[in-house]
Image 1: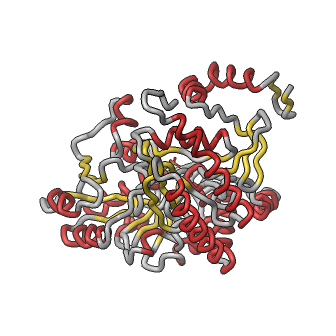
Image 2 (image 1 turned 60 degrees about the vertical axis):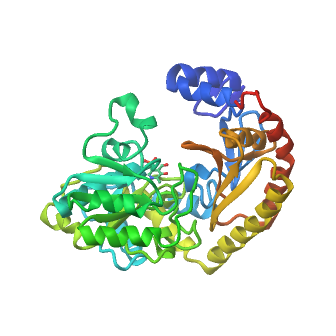
Length: 426
Ligand SMILES: Cc1ncc(COP(=O)(O)O)c(C=O)c1O
């Protein structure tokens, strides 16, 4: 019997049965068939414990949501003490928590003027795209092929058909896609002068973290300026020190017109997202402050947590740990690649954002399963299953770094076995 006080289940099987019956049958069967039937129970630091008791080191971090690990004590304490005074607040009114957090966010990016809050990444993307349309009075939106910006109306239309077709929301006329790392293709669509925005992640996560070629992003930004298009950086996965600087665009010498962040902004304990905009883009906030409304967007408890997340990320010891972890895995993965060169063929890395390439169309699915069996949770890239997303947290310690590498090494024979020709990976 698993008795959680609030609810109880006879067993993990009982839970899986009820999850399939009342929640999401597709997800339950997908993970079961993939050989990674995880039900996250206890969670502490960078470790997860499945309902079976199995311990897993978390390298998925749900896209950076758990940048600081699970239930970081400082963040839990901010949220708990915040509950003695605050609640979600009322989005209609000025609030001390929202004003303070907006100021802290804007100060991380001095060319920005306002922070507009949402509850999740897709909502922040939605705000950015609407803002671009307002600022340019144009409708067209350009994104990259295999880009990913969320699942709400405008954001899902920028992405892959994999997520939009099922809801008959694929490829509305005003949404155009161009290949990543191809500035000429971008110029071809921008030069008509009717594109509101180009939205791109500095390193596209769901596409498997392909690295931008030297100068590519800066050229894209220059082209946007030339043709009057707003340049939007999606920092939902690359923000918050994950590339070694607070925002990915800073490391590429960019000054986007807008950028969006989410996931880890709420410390993994209270959802919050934000879209930062320049003064010029944000004029609608002066003209009609109620043009975008979100009851849960910028909830005050989320602002308290987000404010503390930024403060923690600015500490010298955290910044230096990010560099330590990045270097540790740069060296460690180079060694692993030498040892397992028959299947492990490439490392894409910037800071603690890593994509590990395997020499098989479903290679990362097999490696994810092999790692799971060996106590590590890392997920394949949905839009390029050759690439495993390998996302260590910003305060990971040396002991866990070493354990991860040992477990990775130990998982490779099993991955090799799963990848045998003719064998189904999952
Ligand atoms: C780059 C990027 N943008 C936007 C989103 C959407 O965020 P959310 O799921 O919080 O709506 C995600 C989610 O994974 C993402 O990875």
